[in-house]
Image (tube, rainbow over all chains, first blue to last red; front, top):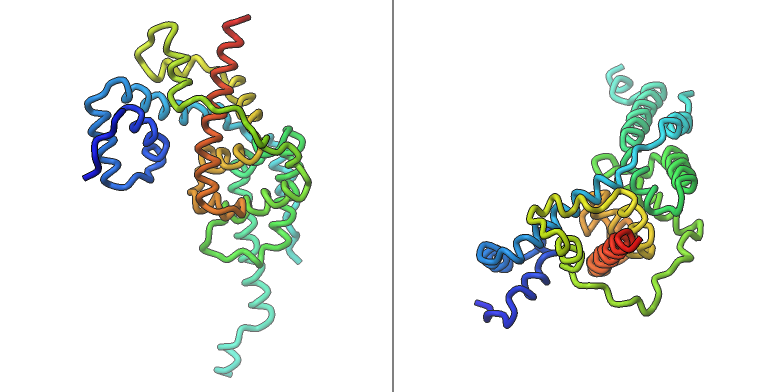
Length: 80
Length: 197
């Protein structure tokens, strides 16, 4: 058992990135989830971070120009 | 005659190799959208990204024999791409030694949610425009941006990103952590600027 943290919300913040990256140990995961179940303040911020990651990925995803695709296909080495 | 049947003729071998190569090229081309998406954010402009992708494919097609079938082709292609990017000297923009301290991880949420008292986190995130995100990401120093682009956008594991960038896994993690904070600070600043105008 790890001792309780002086500021559980600050500790929860430290665990947010590794939690969302799924790299916490089982014990840390349980600890984070227990805190999130009880703390709406942190829960909102975790949810926001999760939405932000999806949102950034969608905003960043830019389709490749069709013409570049044609140029790439033309780089193929012709069969002899 | 039985011995001859076991040893593949030159023609059979050449045909088999041609088949492997065609399959390699098709598999590689099927990943081009993902390769471009990463290149677009590693390079500084659309033109640079297009050049980089073309050079990557040109090199990949020439050295296809060095790809080991069954391993991660996307990682293999992106390793070529990141090496080319480094070779081309596109890393002049170094992370400053003394970066201003990034705000904490909750700072962006607190900035966005404070004004309108919105409770739905998904609505809060919609206050950011696509332009805000693209420009905030491009302002993140290269070393940090590479980690974000590979892991958060390219969906690579820390391990793959470490291999692609040629840095230890712990460095990927710390750059990612810090890079995300720099990105969020940039986003908070862009919202503050929009509200100030």
